[in-house]
Amino acid sequence: MSDPKILKKMEQENQKYKPKPAVVAVYWILRLIVIGVMVMTIIHKNYESTFVCVLVLILFMLPRFCLLYTSPSPRDA
Image (cartoon, rainbow, N blue to C red; front, side, top):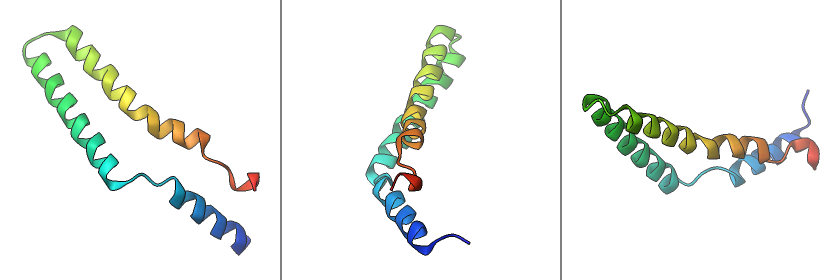
């Protein structure tokens, strides 16, 4: 059904944009720190800081979505 050349090209493009394990580890560590701080702010009833933590977590998700929308399509070749 699909052309093998197109499938091979898609695999090559996916490998090019695959994040490095060290970068993924840093993102997870930062997310865990923010979640820990968010739990502490909830315990201390400091809801303004909790809101900031939620915004930071949303910002940590942006690179994933930006990469999805900027990676080239197999039809661009």
